[in-house]
Image 1 (tube, rainbow, N blue to C red):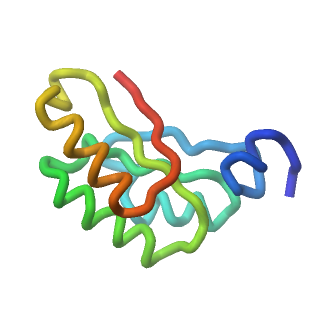
Image 2: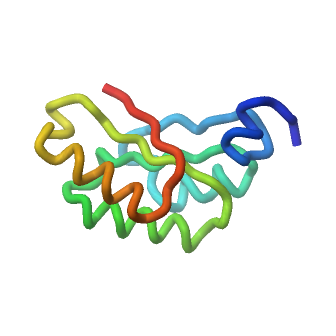
Length: 103
């Protein structure tokens, strides 16, 4: 374990955040990153609906007990603004404590 403000704040072993990669940052990849001591990041842009995102979060939670984040893409072509709140709510409702944004 490397002790830094980032590791303490995120509850991870190493100060590494596995950045979101479309079509790669799925539950299995995110769980593997988190199990290895980094902070895996699930890509919300991979899911068309908040319910699909919820299912992916639940699957990730079933694969790891370690912290992970969800990336909420703010790019309008990937995340229509009228759906943004629903994706954030789904993330928070499922108990994810780390949200990253992009776009």
